[in-house]
Image (cartoon, rainbow, N blue to C red; front, side, top):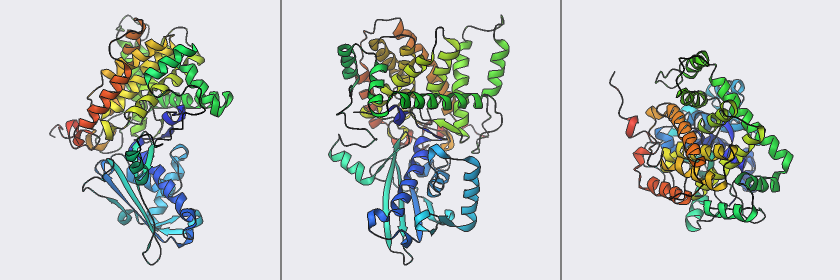
Length: 471
């Protein structure tokens, strides 16, 4: 198994990796196939009309997650990592006015957002909670190309055929995982990771680096790691400077700026409590997730809904820990990606599949492992840190109010960051020997997600999403 650092940490936009980035990517893929005549089956210019439908969780919480907007942006040619906010709004307005897509090699295609983008609130599609269908027809109404896509978490997508193939052959490449052959350290479990580390004498970060460099080379890897941290860091800084009400109708107020100002004022004073460090962690995470809720640029870590945990703990490492370094940040990212890859490969990072334990729980495990590594922890201590953090998120539901990635998601990232630091600290106080292996904890999370009722998995049909205060 090989999942790249940049499969786990993808630069994109909010508010959701599975509901925004995934559908946008699917729309782009469909348009690319249409422009190629689906391999020459038809002339691209035959396409005259396009329609889309959203199913399951994409329908129930699609409005709150801006899924409709994401699909339209994808059909307009935008990709999650290259959205120019001003140009995007201009193109969306133009689409509403003309009801026409300027689709490159296909020419102009009729697409009426009010009629051709349907939220289907019936039964979910059979293979995954996050389903969408795209269909292109010619001028006579004949279907030229039809595809069913599933958004499977973290911005990854799969077609119906790919998911069916995965059911028949569990080892099929589904999440952009590459064949292990050719990579120096192709661990597919935490046990394999620890054994390879013992045999090689290398840290988890060094093994992950060797895998990445075998594909990218050292300079490209270092530059891309720097770019990921730069976007994370800028997102925190931006979130700490902005005020106002978040979009979506809940009237949730941005709080990160005001909290940050108070923390700065208290720094160095006798009135500051020792537990203020938890407030710093929370405010860094909240800054990211307020930006995510507003549709800003974030990094999936491993998802948008959990995008605040890893950046918050890296900022904590850089600004509050002693003897920190740029190498420490790189080791943090490499180690965190190794843990995130194991969780994704063996369980899930999708709230629609396994609840928030798979999102904030995975992010907290990644951050705990990364911090432990950056602070000099052994491989065994790193594995222990990840297990502690994940273990204490087991059973957490995904129940966003009104389908928005705001309540309880923003604060939940702060709690995930605090747990990550506590887990890393506990692991560093031990020798790495512990009772519950990380692999077993990951498997428990997978089983718990399987048993969890769908209303607690990103549909906003249960939990906090329905237990609202009466106004």
